[in-house]
Image (cartoon, rainbow, N blue to C red; front, side):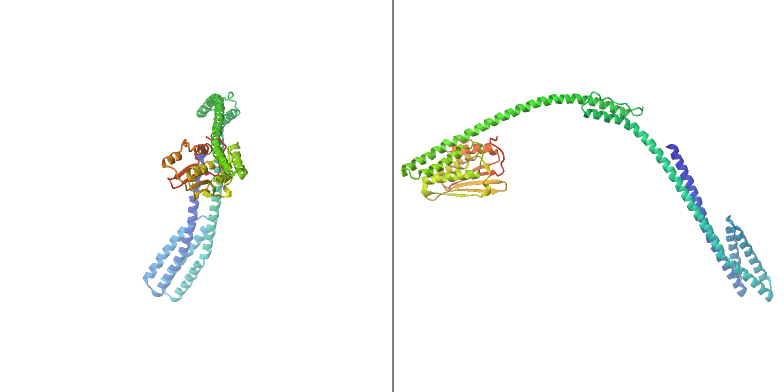
Length: 478
């Protein structure tokens, strides 16, 4: 590479020198062309000054003639110095004609006779015209020489370009050979490293051995290969440890799953116990109503009331899936309203408002009925007229808001705070249904629900239940 670099420098230096000489010759050709033009321009001015002197006898014109003649002679000496065909001979011939021209001028100036003077003047004038008429011929000769120089210069540039291209190709080939050889010194041990990696990928850690690079200047790669082999052995030990850890972790997960299954069973049992608590309480109130109605009416009307009661009992007792929906809940409320209507007559007005699109919302069973029951028993039962209980269900975004409102006696503030607490562990003798309902909501929705009561004494009560509309879980939830 060093030799090629030196050769390229030498070639470039020689090429530049040759280019400089060629360009100098080309420049000299242009200068000769200018000298030729200046020569004939000087001859023309020299002749003009001589004619002025002949007619005006002004010494200044004669001095100018001699000065222009000397300048023409200098230009001619520069033009004669050339070795190109017969141009040197032609310029010498032009110089002889110029000397002859000056001799005729000298004779003409020394003659006194009119006839001889006219003769010499005519001779000098013909010679002057002959010299001037030779300008196109000499100009053509210089143009030809200029074209020859141009052709030679272009040919030289082509040769120089070819030589440069050859040297460039030789350098590229040499550099490529050296580069390939250097790369092979690196890739050969790396190929061995790749083979070891493939062995590790296939799970074979025992056959991994470092492959030394055959070169004393590749110690870094040898260190890399040795380190890789050590890493492979450490990796084998680490994988063995991971396998042992994974077996232990698998056993732990199986144990945790078993504990979770037991916890779910316990939670489900707890839910079933909670749901069963409200059935005797409700059943007692319903049977009390039936006994009073049977006493007043004998047996008439009891059949219809028994059908409604049976529906309520069936809905309460057949909740084996632990999950209901708003449509079934509202239907149970309607049945309960009709049962209560037999007892209270027209003293209490029941209003229900909801959209059919909300009917499929999932909810634990027997949630709304305890709230309605509390509104009747603890709210409007003692009102002789104007009592009102309303149930309204609204949708807002992905949630449903259930609002149960009455205009009854209201609830003391201390009890309101207890009911609205997040624990739901209120156990007043008058609140068994609400406590049971609150706990089942917590089991089903977790923390994703709102149960809130707003009330003042003698100002009615508003119960608000806010639940998600997209509940896909199964009871029991913790």
